[in-house]
Image 1: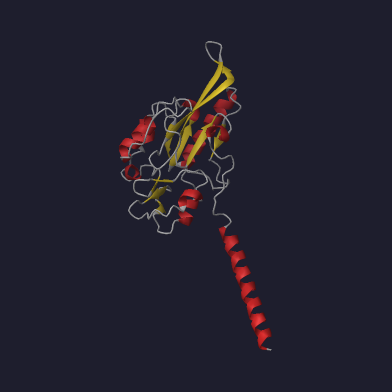
Image 2: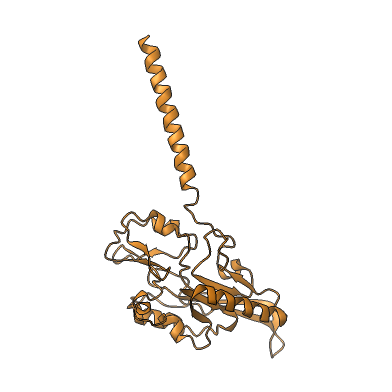
Length: 255
């Protein structure tokens, strides 16, 4: 199961942010003007599991008053990667893969080591200062267990956030992309939908109207633990070579 977020119909209402906080009992965090347009949350974090970005683009599309200006709005969330580095590095098993294919943190098992924080290629996971543990989107695991859709998707008034089986969502996304291209929106593109990408595809993917970097997303994310097996092999070879050199030296000293 997963999310398909169509940013072309996002109106920036932040209903998803509010619904996420209310359902998951996420504590408040200081709100205020950040100096970044109307974005008063700034980004994803331990107490912000949904973040609606407001991106101003002067000089793009002429509005009704003739001014060239475009808003890009997008609701960001944990990507629930197919190859999740956070799972690879968690020493306690706090992070686990659910029966729905999502990635969830068990807060009662998390010891606050923070290894998963730098491991995430999207910078999604964060540690909450109040208790030292890490937190992120669970895709409303408790709701899924009783056949309900996540709170953010349920609250979205424009169906910008769509929830369902990933195979069906990918088909739906391809159709929507074709519609936008036929309408002349050549910059429209899908992000995170490809199982052949650096994280094996994500459980939360997006239709964007500009390059990923514009939305603060990495253009070519790669699972950060991809090279660990090769690195450990190199360490083992180096250790073996060192032991062999020590043995040769010891034998030479005896003779």
